Amino acid sequence: MVKQDDIARILNISRTTVARALNGKDNIKPETKKRILELCEELGYVKNPISTSLALKNEKNIYAFIIKGRNTYYTNTIKKGLKSAHKELSMYKFNLFIVETNIDYPEEQIEKLQKIIRTKQVNGIIITPLLKDRVKKIKRDNPNISFIALDLPLDRTTLSIYSDYNKLGRILGNMLLNSLSKDDKILLIETEDDMISAKDSFNGLYQKLLEEKKCGIVGPYFVSDLENNLPKVISDYMTKDIDAIYASRFLENIIDYILKEERYELKIVMIGLSDKIKKFILEDKVLAAVTPDYYKMGVTAINMMFECLYKGINPEKIKNDLEYKIIVKENL
Image 1 (tube, helix red, strand yellow):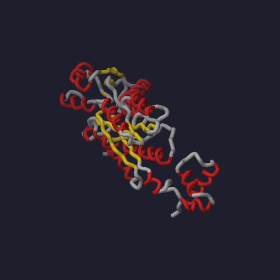
Image 2 (cartoon, helix red, strand yellow):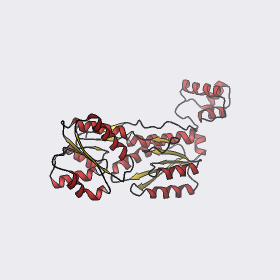
Image 3 (tube, helix red, strand yellow):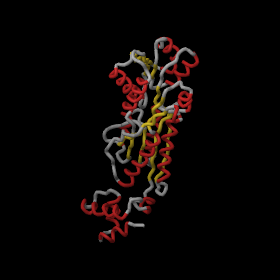
Image 4 (cartoon, helix red, strand yellow):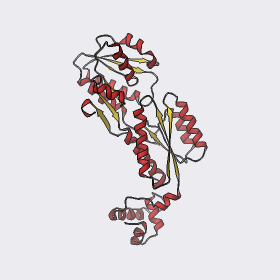
């Protein structure tokens, strides 16, 4: 196996210089760094870009703030991705602590974030930023901590790993249109208390429907506290000529209510995935679901944080090109 000492001997330079190049340090001549990296690639020195001994001397603590909602698939899949990537880096003192907070209480996230930062034992923060302005201020006040935003962009200076939810909404809109005939009616209901990605996916679907001009759009109706006002919403807006319905949040609850009433047969597509959504698809109550690859989000976040903390690489690109999974009855 090729070692850093071998690279140093071949190029007649010190091992320290080789380590600087592999760690992304600036205190090395560009031409020297280029020669080192080219030789490493040629000899196959790519598996361990930094030495084990160096890594073991530099313990890093990373806290991942992920949110909990009713959809446990979302939280659990991101956690699996985080833990899987962390396991691959088990040879380093790269400690991962997962902090879960309730989506409906964003202040809880801020309180726990501030408490952890006060310990002065944190090197990196991975966070789904619910209260963006507050999180940005905390980031500015702690320049020595590396921040990565997960599933929601934070700002132009922060690496953000997320899916293009507007595009996802357009995919849902296209799937819904393909299931309907000309002049069918689609009821759109949206909650006013939007969190995470609901607004972007809803807007994507709505724009797609407007562009195609194939079906009649009823709404959109924006409802405060939609979850607790379902009977009134159904009574007020879901007339018998409605052929399809979409809501980016609480659609599972809406379907449950409709099935309980046994009044309507509707065309429905959904964002996200859960055991209940799978059941709806298998029972032909839902045509399909589209979900971002949350597992890959978690894996990418850990790998990027490792790059930042151990190699000194600070990627500037906002990664919003993660893949989607389309779930239909045939692939369940």
